[in-house]
Image (cartoon, rainbow, N blue to C red; front, side, top):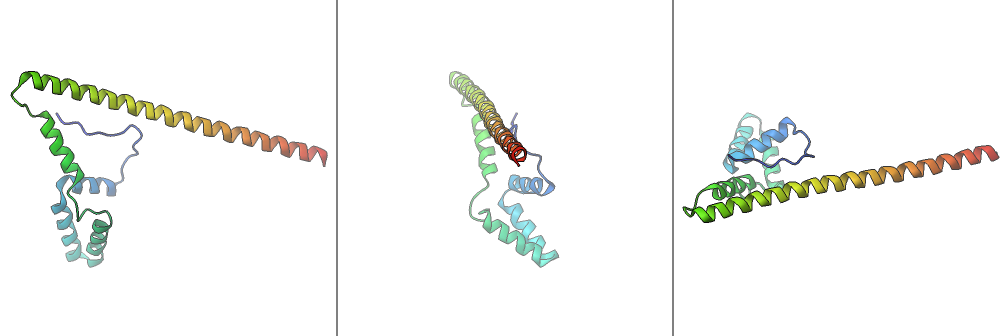
Length: 139
């Protein structure tokens, strides 16, 4: 069973983002096919897709998702050595747990940073309000 990594803080993707993910999963050929169809139907669409493919470097490298999927299939296949397969499974489980713990740590770190920034904002605001109150009382 293959699981895809989705961070807890990832926003929901728009239809355009989902279409991009779909084409990335299919590979470079799908991008080229959509670009050709875009040129046939309405040439500015094909031209925009070509520009996007060049700008995002999709024309010059293989899909990172395809590499990730091939790596996942490589890590799940059996080597025939039961001891090594057990070791590999334990190591991968440990690494996944460490990744989960690290992501939780980063989330807590971001929340602490956000809270500190908000507290600083509120204290600065309170000082400004106090200064404004003092100025209005003296006037």
